[in-house]
Length: 58
Image 1: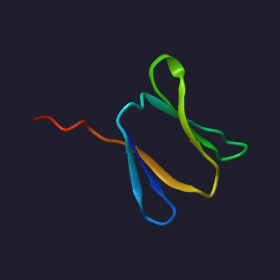
Image 2: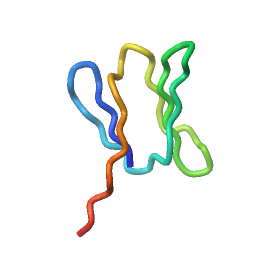
Image 3: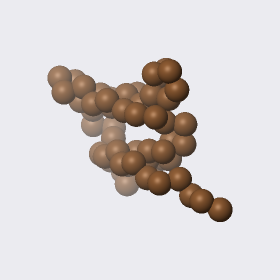
Image 4: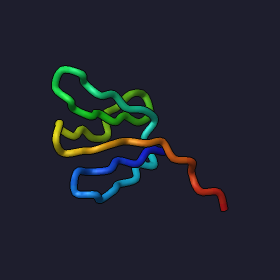
Protein backbone atom coordinates (compact mmCIF):
# COMPACT_ATOMS: atom_id res chain seq x y z
CA UNK A 1 0.00 0.00 0.00
CA UNK A 2 1.22 3.47 -0.82
CA UNK A 3 0.37 6.91 0.52
CA UNK A 4 0.67 10.08 -1.57
CA UNK A 5 1.23 13.43 0.15
CA UNK A 6 0.10 16.46 -1.77
CA UNK A 7 1.56 19.99 -1.76
CA UNK A 8 -1.21 21.27 0.56
CA UNK A 9 -0.34 18.62 3.18
CA UNK A 10 -3.28 16.29 2.61
CA UNK A 11 -2.64 12.59 2.10
CA UNK A 12 -4.34 9.82 0.16
CA UNK A 13 -3.90 6.11 0.80
CA UNK A 14 -3.87 3.84 -2.23
CA UNK A 15 -4.56 0.29 -0.96
CA UNK A 16 -4.67 -1.29 -4.44
CA UNK A 17 -1.33 0.21 -5.50
CA UNK A 18 1.45 -2.23 -6.33
CA UNK A 19 4.10 0.22 -7.54
CA UNK A 20 4.84 3.65 -8.91
CA UNK A 21 7.04 5.53 -11.35
CA UNK A 22 8.25 9.12 -11.39
CA UNK A 23 8.99 10.45 -14.86
CA UNK A 24 12.32 12.28 -14.54
CA UNK A 25 11.61 14.54 -17.50
CA UNK A 26 8.11 15.74 -16.61
CA UNK A 27 7.92 14.96 -12.87
CA UNK A 28 4.66 13.04 -13.30
CA UNK A 29 3.91 10.43 -10.64
CA UNK A 30 2.14 7.35 -12.04
CA UNK A 31 0.77 4.70 -9.67
CA UNK A 32 -0.20 1.24 -10.91
CA UNK A 33 -2.02 -1.78 -9.57
CA UNK A 34 -2.27 -5.42 -10.59
CA UNK A 35 -1.01 -6.30 -14.07
CA UNK A 36 0.57 -2.82 -14.32
CA UNK A 37 -2.77 -1.11 -14.93
CA UNK A 38 -2.63 2.60 -14.18
CA UNK A 39 -4.62 3.59 -11.09
CA UNK A 40 -3.83 7.31 -11.10
CA UNK A 41 -1.34 9.89 -12.30
CA UNK A 42 -0.42 13.22 -10.73
CA UNK A 43 1.39 16.00 -12.62
CA UNK A 44 4.51 17.66 -11.27
CA UNK A 45 3.70 20.32 -8.70
CA UNK A 46 0.55 18.56 -7.52
CA UNK A 47 2.17 15.92 -5.29
CA UNK A 48 4.98 16.26 -2.72
CA UNK A 49 5.96 12.69 -1.79
CA UNK A 50 4.98 9.04 -1.98
CA UNK A 51 5.74 6.43 0.65
CA UNK A 52 5.08 2.74 1.09
CA UNK A 53 3.19 1.91 4.26
CA UNK A 54 2.47 -1.44 5.86
CA UNK A 55 -1.15 -2.59 5.70
CA UNK A 56 -3.01 -2.60 8.99
CA UNK A 57 -3.28 -6.03 10.61
CA UNK A 58 -6.36 -6.76 12.69
